[in-house]
Image (cartoon, rainbow, N blue to C red; front, top):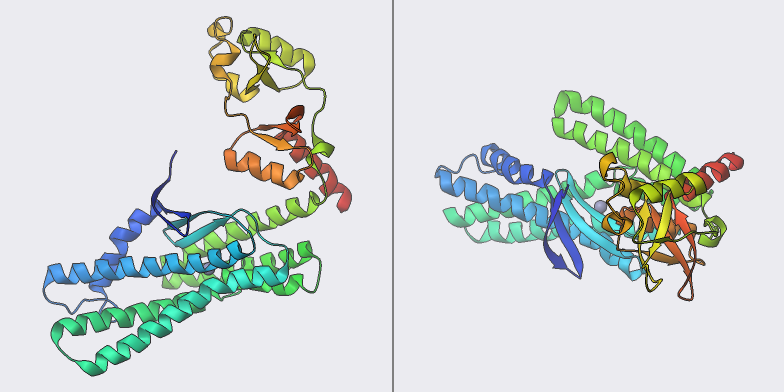
Length: 367
Ligand code: ZN
């Protein structure tokens, strides 16, 4: 299911909004229209009240976007690709292709976002002071109030993100600090541990204060666990190349055999994925795996051919590539197998199962 839609591109980065963000567009204007301090509860004319609340919401999330662009800007200067920036219920996420292992780089990328929020906060506050001193005309008063709220929320964004709850910005900075003193995996585990403690504390505190905090706490807890897993996998696969893991004796199947014939081959060879070749030219035209055929009804196994069910976007990787890159490619394309090439020649096949098995074995032997 498609859960995000793209609304534009900034600095060449696709900007997306997640469906959960639609709730923000309803919830925040309602909250801001009722809040007497930072919102517009005292604006009597209702349409104006809601319009101002809506404008504040949009400006606020534009600032969240700028915060993420801050992270992205620095990450890109280190050659890290940004897949997209997605606005979600709880803020924004810049999906980076990689998280740098170098503590100094991670530190700079992590602090860039909060610094953007701080800059916007301070700047808005100065503008507020100027406006405030110029005029007390009613319309300008509303705008002054809007800028004041924007300043406040950006400063909150700055402060909140600095909480050392990994994987929030402050937590990443903490990991970077640890990582400059101990092995990367240990540093991650320490930061994850602290992040989880913060998450639990925040969740309990949230029970009495706000549902929002509980949501953020859950988000941090899950995020911390995932990052720990990611660090474990990337450390385990360090220095391992695709060629060390790939299956070399690949069997090809022609595109015109039936599913029954393919199943027979799978049982016989004990392989569940095959490159498919054109029956006439011998060129590779696809990849077929057990996943592709498991939904074909039994009574059609003799009539449906491999070419009808195979995956045609064959993605390949060089045998000299890092195993971690293979894993990233598999997950970003959501596929099970990659063809391994050497100078345009297919030399093997590497599957998610191959990678998982080595992670288990290597991870086990490390302990
Ligand atoms: Zn951030």
